[in-house]
Image 1 (cartoon, rainbow, N blue to C red):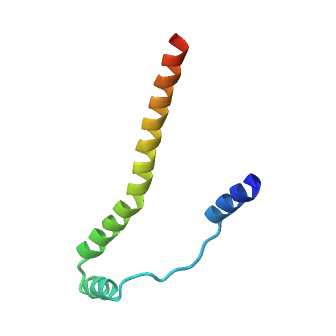
Image 2 (cartoon, one colour):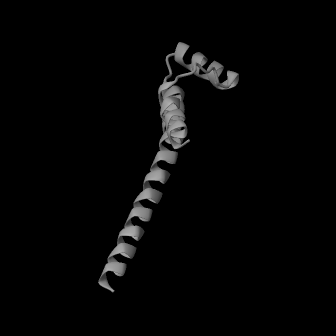
Length: 81
């Protein structure tokens, strides 16, 4: 059972699905600005997307580090007694 779950989780990282999930208004705005030679809105939109992508991984990393540090302190406390 654990092998099946592990396999499904690992397989989900390697399977890619195409998605068209872009707001029509955002796309039209960026296309109009790029055609007029202005790329600042597109760059700002890209920065926002990168921010949204990085935040969950950063939060998971911080929580994982705090969990590791707490378990290390707990293990050291148990060994000292």
